[in-house]
Amino acid sequence: MHCGHHILFAGGGSLGYLYPGLSIAAEIEARLPGVHISFAGDGRPIERHTIRSAGYAYSAIPCCPKPRSAWESLRFVTDNALGFFASRWMLKEQGVTLVVGLGGHASAPVMRAAHGWGLPMVMLEQNAIPSLAARWLAGVSDAVCLGFEEARAHLPVQAPVRVTGVPVRPSFQAFGERPSRCVADADPLRQRRLVVLGGSGGARTLNEAMPIAAARLAGELGNWRIIHQTGEGQLVETERRYQEAGIDALVVTYIDELADLLRETDLVVCPAGGCTMAEIALSGTAMLVIPDTLSRHGSQIANAKVYERLQACRIIDETRGTLSDTIAAELGPLTTQPATLARMAEAAATLVRHDAARSVAEACMETLGLATAPKGAASRRAAAA
Image 1 (cartoon, rainbow, N blue to C red):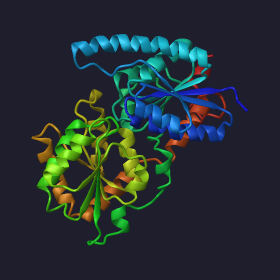
Image 2 (spheres, helix red, strand yellow):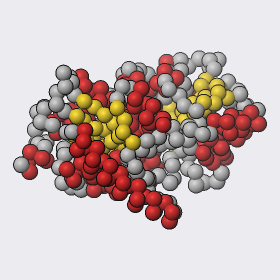
Image 3 (cartoon, helix red, strand yellow):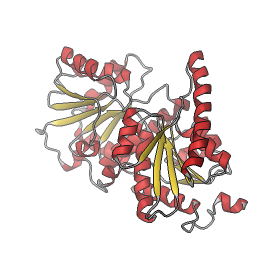
Image 4 (cartoon, rainbow, N blue to C red):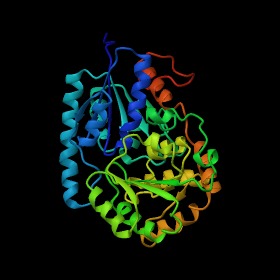
Protein backbone atom coordinates (compact mmCIF):
# COMPACT_ATOMS: atom_id res chain seq x y z
CA MET A 1 0.00 0.00 0.00
CA HIS A 2 1.27 3.45 -0.94
CA CYS A 3 1.63 5.72 2.11
CA GLY A 4 1.13 8.90 0.08
CA HIS A 5 4.71 10.16 0.23
CA HIS A 6 7.12 10.34 -2.69
CA ILE A 7 10.73 11.08 -1.68
CA LEU A 8 13.12 12.07 -4.46
CA PHE A 9 16.88 11.78 -3.97
CA ALA A 10 18.76 14.21 -6.21
CA GLY A 11 22.49 14.10 -6.86
CA GLY A 12 25.21 12.79 -9.08
CA GLY A 13 28.17 13.49 -11.25
CA SER A 14 29.89 10.58 -9.52
CA LEU A 15 28.54 7.49 -7.81
CA GLY A 16 29.96 8.74 -4.53
CA TYR A 17 27.10 11.24 -4.36
CA LEU A 18 24.44 8.60 -4.98
CA TYR A 19 25.63 5.76 -2.76
CA PRO A 20 24.60 7.46 0.52
CA GLY A 21 21.12 7.90 -0.92
CA LEU A 22 20.72 4.13 -1.29
CA SER A 23 21.40 3.58 2.42
CA ILE A 24 19.17 6.47 3.49
CA ALA A 25 16.39 5.15 1.24
CA ALA A 26 16.62 1.70 2.86
CA GLU A 27 16.36 3.25 6.33
CA ILE A 28 13.30 5.29 5.31
CA GLU A 29 11.59 2.28 3.77
CA ALA A 30 12.05 0.40 7.03
CA ARG A 31 10.30 3.23 8.89
CA LEU A 32 7.68 4.17 6.31
CA PRO A 33 6.22 1.13 4.53
CA GLY A 34 4.70 1.96 1.17
CA VAL A 35 6.76 5.11 0.63
CA HIS A 36 7.63 5.79 -3.02
CA ILE A 37 11.31 6.56 -3.54
CA SER A 38 13.05 7.63 -6.74
CA PHE A 39 16.35 9.19 -7.80
CA ALA A 40 17.40 11.97 -10.19
CA GLY A 41 20.90 12.39 -11.60
CA ASP A 42 22.82 13.60 -14.63
CA GLY A 43 21.94 10.57 -16.74
CA ARG A 44 25.28 8.77 -16.91
CA PRO A 45 24.76 5.10 -17.79
CA ILE A 46 26.61 3.86 -14.71
CA GLU A 47 24.40 5.99 -12.44
CA ARG A 48 21.25 4.82 -14.17
CA HIS A 49 22.36 1.17 -13.96
CA THR A 50 23.34 1.42 -10.28
CA ILE A 51 20.09 3.01 -9.15
CA ARG A 52 17.81 0.82 -11.25
CA SER A 53 19.68 -2.31 -10.12
CA ALA A 54 18.84 -1.30 -6.56
CA GLY A 55 15.16 -1.26 -7.50
CA TYR A 56 14.47 2.47 -7.82
CA ALA A 57 13.24 4.63 -10.67
CA TYR A 58 15.82 7.03 -12.10
CA SER A 59 15.26 10.32 -13.96
CA ALA A 60 17.95 12.15 -15.94
CA ILE A 61 18.13 15.92 -15.39
CA PRO A 62 20.00 18.29 -17.73
CA CYS A 63 22.87 19.77 -15.72
CA CYS A 64 26.53 20.70 -15.96
CA PRO A 65 29.37 21.01 -13.41
CA LYS A 66 31.15 24.26 -12.63
CA PRO A 67 32.70 25.60 -15.87
CA ARG A 68 36.45 25.67 -16.50
CA SER A 69 36.36 27.45 -19.87
CA ALA A 70 34.27 30.00 -21.78
CA TRP A 71 32.55 27.26 -23.78
CA GLU A 72 31.72 25.37 -20.61
CA SER A 73 30.33 28.58 -19.10
CA LEU A 74 27.75 28.81 -21.86
CA ARG A 75 26.81 25.18 -21.47
CA PHE A 76 26.67 25.58 -17.68
CA VAL A 77 24.04 28.32 -18.00
CA THR A 78 21.91 26.60 -20.63
CA ASP A 79 22.04 23.06 -19.20
CA ASN A 80 21.28 24.12 -15.66
CA ALA A 81 18.46 26.39 -16.79
CA LEU A 82 16.98 23.45 -18.67
CA GLY A 83 17.55 21.29 -15.60
CA PHE A 84 15.69 23.74 -13.38
CA PHE A 85 12.59 23.83 -15.59
CA ALA A 86 12.70 20.07 -16.20
CA SER A 87 12.89 19.56 -12.44
CA ARG A 88 9.94 21.86 -11.80
CA TRP A 89 7.81 19.82 -14.19
CA MET A 90 9.05 16.49 -12.80
CA LEU A 91 8.39 17.42 -9.17
CA LYS A 92 4.87 18.52 -9.97
CA GLU A 93 4.10 15.65 -12.34
CA GLN A 94 5.37 12.95 -9.98
CA GLY A 95 3.80 14.39 -6.83
CA VAL A 96 7.07 14.59 -4.90
CA THR A 97 6.57 15.41 -1.21
CA LEU A 98 10.24 15.63 -0.08
CA VAL A 99 13.50 16.25 -1.92
CA VAL A 100 16.79 15.00 -0.47
CA GLY A 101 19.82 16.69 -2.02
CA LEU A 102 22.84 14.37 -2.09
CA GLY A 103 25.34 16.80 -3.63
CA GLY A 104 27.04 16.97 -6.99
CA HIS A 105 26.02 19.11 -9.94
CA ALA A 106 22.79 17.17 -10.50
CA SER A 107 21.51 18.17 -7.08
CA ALA A 108 21.34 21.96 -7.43
CA PRO A 109 18.71 22.38 -10.21
CA VAL A 110 16.36 19.92 -8.50
CA MET A 111 16.79 21.55 -5.10
CA ARG A 112 16.22 25.03 -6.55
CA ALA A 113 13.06 23.81 -8.27
CA ALA A 114 11.87 22.23 -5.02
CA HIS A 115 12.44 25.51 -3.21
CA GLY A 116 10.43 27.29 -5.89
CA TRP A 117 7.48 24.95 -5.28
CA GLY A 118 7.83 25.29 -1.52
CA LEU A 119 8.56 21.58 -1.07
CA PRO A 120 10.30 20.28 2.07
CA MET A 121 14.03 19.75 1.52
CA VAL A 122 16.79 17.88 3.34
CA MET A 123 20.39 18.42 2.26
CA LEU A 124 23.34 16.09 2.77
CA GLU A 125 26.78 17.72 2.61
CA GLN A 126 29.50 15.05 2.41
CA ASN A 127 32.52 17.33 2.30
CA ALA A 128 34.43 19.41 4.83
CA ILE A 129 34.04 22.49 2.61
CA PRO A 130 30.62 22.93 0.94
CA SER A 131 30.22 24.30 -2.58
CA LEU A 132 28.73 27.76 -3.13
CA ALA A 133 25.46 26.18 -4.26
CA ALA A 134 25.36 24.05 -1.12
CA ARG A 135 25.89 27.11 1.06
CA TRP A 136 22.87 28.84 -0.47
CA LEU A 137 20.73 25.71 -0.40
CA ALA A 138 21.58 25.12 3.26
CA GLY A 139 19.91 28.42 4.11
CA VAL A 140 16.59 27.34 2.57
CA SER A 141 16.57 23.65 3.55
CA ASP A 142 14.54 22.18 6.39
CA ALA A 143 17.46 20.07 7.60
CA VAL A 144 21.15 20.06 6.70
CA CYS A 145 23.08 16.86 7.47
CA LEU A 146 26.86 17.21 7.58
CA GLY A 147 29.49 14.56 7.05
CA PHE A 148 32.12 16.71 8.76
CA GLU A 149 31.80 19.12 11.69
CA GLU A 150 34.28 21.35 9.83
CA ALA A 151 31.62 22.19 7.21
CA ARG A 152 29.46 24.03 9.77
CA ALA A 153 31.64 27.15 9.73
CA HIS A 154 31.04 27.61 5.97
CA LEU A 155 27.23 27.58 6.17
CA PRO A 156 24.74 30.31 7.11
CA VAL A 157 24.32 30.73 10.86
CA GLN A 158 20.57 30.11 10.58
CA ALA A 159 20.98 26.82 8.67
CA PRO A 160 19.33 23.90 10.55
CA VAL A 161 22.53 21.88 10.82
CA ARG A 162 23.16 18.50 12.40
CA VAL A 163 26.33 16.40 12.08
CA THR A 164 25.33 12.90 10.99
CA GLY A 165 28.48 11.60 9.32
CA VAL A 166 28.52 10.33 5.73
CA PRO A 167 26.17 7.39 5.03
CA VAL A 168 27.85 4.44 3.32
CA ARG A 169 26.47 1.70 1.12
CA PRO A 170 24.53 -1.05 2.92
CA SER A 171 27.27 -3.56 2.09
CA PHE A 172 29.76 -1.53 4.15
CA GLN A 173 27.51 -1.31 7.18
CA ALA A 174 28.10 -5.02 7.75
CA PHE A 175 31.68 -4.26 8.79
CA GLY A 176 30.50 -2.86 12.12
CA GLU A 177 33.41 -2.60 14.52
CA ARG A 178 35.58 -4.99 12.50
CA PRO A 179 39.35 -4.51 13.14
CA SER A 180 41.70 -3.68 10.31
CA ARG A 181 43.06 -6.49 8.15
CA CYS A 182 46.60 -5.67 9.29
CA VAL A 183 45.64 -6.05 12.95
CA ALA A 184 43.74 -9.26 12.27
CA ASP A 185 46.55 -10.86 10.26
CA ALA A 186 50.15 -9.79 10.73
CA ASP A 187 51.67 -12.80 8.98
CA PRO A 188 54.73 -11.41 7.14
CA LEU A 189 54.55 -14.18 4.53
CA ARG A 190 50.95 -13.50 3.50
CA GLN A 191 50.48 -11.87 0.12
CA ARG A 192 49.33 -8.28 0.58
CA ARG A 193 46.70 -6.55 -1.52
CA LEU A 194 46.73 -3.01 -2.89
CA VAL A 195 43.52 -1.59 -4.39
CA VAL A 196 43.66 1.50 -6.60
CA LEU A 197 40.38 3.37 -7.14
CA GLY A 198 40.28 5.64 -10.14
CA GLY A 199 36.67 6.59 -9.36
CA SER A 200 33.53 5.65 -11.31
CA GLY A 201 34.22 8.46 -13.78
CA GLY A 202 37.91 7.67 -14.05
CA ALA A 203 40.83 9.68 -12.66
CA ARG A 204 43.05 9.93 -15.71
CA THR A 205 46.13 11.27 -13.91
CA LEU A 206 46.03 8.42 -11.38
CA ASN A 207 45.47 5.82 -14.11
CA GLU A 208 48.50 7.16 -15.96
CA ALA A 209 50.80 7.54 -12.96
CA MET A 210 50.11 4.39 -10.96
CA PRO A 211 51.66 1.86 -13.42
CA ILE A 212 54.83 3.99 -13.57
CA ALA A 213 55.01 4.20 -9.78
CA ALA A 214 54.43 0.45 -9.48
CA ALA A 215 57.30 -0.25 -11.89
CA ARG A 216 59.63 1.87 -9.76
CA LEU A 217 58.55 -0.09 -6.68
CA ALA A 218 58.76 -3.53 -8.31
CA GLY A 219 60.96 -4.82 -5.50
CA GLU A 220 58.84 -3.44 -2.64
CA LEU A 221 55.63 -4.67 -4.30
CA GLY A 222 56.92 -8.18 -4.98
CA ASN A 223 54.56 -9.66 -2.37
CA TRP A 224 51.64 -7.40 -3.23
CA ARG A 225 48.70 -8.03 -5.56
CA ILE A 226 47.49 -4.86 -7.33
CA ILE A 227 43.83 -4.46 -8.30
CA HIS A 228 43.15 -1.24 -10.19
CA GLN A 229 39.70 0.22 -10.94
CA THR A 230 40.04 2.64 -13.84
CA GLY A 231 36.55 4.05 -14.24
CA GLU A 232 34.75 4.47 -17.55
CA GLY A 233 36.67 4.58 -20.82
CA GLN A 234 40.18 3.99 -19.45
CA LEU A 235 40.48 0.24 -19.02
CA VAL A 236 42.46 -0.62 -22.18
CA GLU A 237 45.03 2.18 -21.84
CA THR A 238 45.65 1.51 -18.15
CA GLU A 239 46.00 -2.23 -18.72
CA ARG A 240 48.51 -1.53 -21.51
CA ARG A 241 50.57 0.71 -19.21
CA TYR A 242 50.88 -2.03 -16.59
CA GLN A 243 51.90 -4.55 -19.23
CA GLU A 244 54.57 -2.22 -20.61
CA ALA A 245 55.81 -1.64 -17.06
CA GLY A 246 56.09 -5.38 -16.49
CA ILE A 247 53.58 -5.34 -13.62
CA ASP A 248 51.03 -8.14 -13.25
CA ALA A 249 47.99 -6.14 -12.11
CA LEU A 250 44.30 -6.94 -12.34
CA VAL A 251 42.73 -3.97 -14.13
CA VAL A 252 38.95 -3.53 -14.17
CA THR A 253 36.55 -0.77 -15.19
CA TYR A 254 34.46 -0.94 -12.06
CA ILE A 255 34.36 -3.00 -8.84
CA ASP A 256 30.77 -3.92 -8.04
CA GLU A 257 31.39 -5.54 -4.65
CA LEU A 258 34.04 -3.24 -3.21
CA ALA A 259 33.11 -4.05 0.39
CA ASP A 260 33.84 -7.75 -0.14
CA LEU A 261 37.14 -6.93 -1.83
CA LEU A 262 38.26 -4.66 1.00
CA ARG A 263 37.82 -7.47 3.52
CA GLU A 264 41.07 -8.87 2.10
CA THR A 265 42.84 -5.57 1.34
CA ASP A 266 45.74 -3.92 3.17
CA LEU A 267 45.98 -0.50 1.49
CA VAL A 268 43.85 1.62 -0.85
CA VAL A 269 45.02 4.42 -3.15
CA CYS A 270 42.03 6.63 -3.91
CA PRO A 271 40.57 10.13 -4.36
CA ALA A 272 39.42 12.03 -1.26
CA GLY A 273 35.67 12.17 -1.80
CA GLY A 274 33.62 12.15 1.40
CA CYS A 275 31.78 8.90 0.67
CA THR A 276 34.88 7.10 -0.62
CA MET A 277 36.91 7.92 2.50
CA ALA A 278 34.04 7.02 4.85
CA GLU A 279 33.54 3.61 3.23
CA ILE A 280 37.23 2.72 3.28
CA ALA A 281 37.58 3.94 6.88
CA LEU A 282 34.63 1.79 7.93
CA SER A 283 36.16 -1.24 6.22
CA GLY A 284 39.25 -1.02 8.41
CA THR A 285 41.68 -0.39 5.54
CA ALA A 286 44.52 2.11 5.39
CA MET A 287 44.33 4.91 2.82
CA LEU A 288 46.78 6.77 0.60
CA VAL A 289 44.62 9.55 -0.83
CA ILE A 290 45.08 11.81 -3.85
CA PRO A 291 42.78 14.84 -3.50
CA ASP A 292 41.48 16.21 -6.78
CA THR A 293 43.13 19.64 -6.92
CA LEU A 294 40.46 20.74 -9.42
CA SER A 295 37.57 19.83 -7.10
CA ARG A 296 35.40 22.81 -6.41
CA HIS A 297 36.40 24.93 -3.39
CA GLY A 298 39.13 22.46 -2.42
CA SER A 299 36.63 20.08 -0.87
CA GLN A 300 38.72 16.94 -1.39
CA ILE A 301 41.84 18.54 0.06
CA ALA A 302 39.82 19.62 3.09
CA ASN A 303 38.43 16.10 3.54
CA ALA A 304 41.90 14.57 3.39
CA LYS A 305 43.32 17.03 5.91
CA VAL A 306 40.63 16.13 8.45
CA TYR A 307 41.84 12.52 8.30
CA GLU A 308 45.51 13.48 8.12
CA ARG A 309 45.30 15.50 11.34
CA LEU A 310 44.53 12.23 13.15
CA GLN A 311 47.17 10.32 11.15
CA ALA A 312 44.30 8.41 9.56
CA CYS A 313 45.63 8.68 6.01
CA ARG A 314 48.60 9.82 3.96
CA ILE A 315 48.10 12.54 1.35
CA ILE A 316 49.69 12.63 -2.09
CA ASP A 317 49.98 16.17 -3.40
CA GLU A 318 49.54 16.24 -7.18
CA THR A 319 51.16 19.67 -7.39
CA ARG A 320 54.55 18.55 -6.03
CA GLY A 321 56.62 17.05 -8.83
CA THR A 322 55.31 14.31 -11.06
CA LEU A 323 52.46 12.27 -9.65
CA SER A 324 54.20 8.94 -10.29
CA ASP A 325 57.25 10.09 -8.30
CA THR A 326 55.10 11.31 -5.43
CA ILE A 327 53.09 8.07 -5.31
CA ALA A 328 56.28 6.00 -5.30
CA ALA A 329 57.80 8.11 -2.51
CA GLU A 330 54.75 7.73 -0.26
CA LEU A 331 53.79 4.17 -1.16
CA GLY A 332 57.24 2.59 -0.99
CA PRO A 333 57.79 2.81 2.78
CA LEU A 334 54.22 1.72 3.56
CA THR A 335 54.66 -1.60 1.76
CA THR A 336 56.96 -2.79 4.55
CA GLN A 337 55.17 -1.17 7.51
CA PRO A 338 52.06 -3.22 8.39
CA ALA A 339 51.96 -1.72 11.89
CA THR A 340 51.73 1.78 10.38
CA LEU A 341 48.91 0.66 8.09
CA ALA A 342 47.07 -0.77 11.09
CA ARG A 343 47.41 2.47 13.07
CA MET A 344 46.14 4.50 10.10
CA ALA A 345 43.13 2.23 9.69
CA GLU A 346 42.29 2.36 13.39
CA ALA A 347 42.53 6.16 13.45
CA ALA A 348 40.28 6.45 10.38
CA ALA A 349 37.64 4.27 12.03
CA THR A 350 37.21 6.91 14.74
CA LEU A 351 36.06 9.44 12.13
CA VAL A 352 33.10 7.48 10.73
CA ARG A 353 29.63 7.15 12.21
CA HIS A 354 27.99 3.77 11.89
CA ASP A 355 24.52 5.29 12.28
CA ALA A 356 24.88 8.02 9.62
CA ALA A 357 22.19 6.67 7.29
CA ARG A 358 19.78 6.24 10.19
CA SER A 359 20.44 9.81 11.38
CA VAL A 360 19.72 11.29 7.93
CA ALA A 361 16.60 9.13 7.58
CA GLU A 362 15.37 10.47 10.93
CA ALA A 363 15.92 14.02 9.67
CA CYS A 364 13.77 13.18 6.63
CA MET A 365 11.00 11.73 8.77
CA GLU A 366 11.03 14.76 11.06
CA THR A 367 10.84 17.10 8.07
CA LEU A 368 7.73 15.24 6.89
CA GLY A 369 6.25 15.52 10.37
CA LEU A 370 6.36 11.76 10.86
CA ALA A 371 8.72 11.64 13.83
CA THR A 372 9.45 13.73 16.88
CA ALA A 373 12.34 16.09 16.33
CA PRO A 374 15.08 16.28 18.98
CA LYS A 375 14.50 18.98 21.61
CA GLY A 376 15.42 22.40 20.24
CA ALA A 377 15.51 21.16 16.63
CA ALA A 378 12.01 21.96 15.43
CA SER A 379 11.47 22.07 11.69
CA ARG A 380 12.08 25.37 9.99
CA ARG A 381 8.87 24.87 8.06
CA ALA A 382 6.84 24.38 11.26
CA ALA A 383 8.38 27.50 12.76
CA ALA A 384 7.46 29.50 9.68
CA ALA A 385 3.85 28.27 9.64
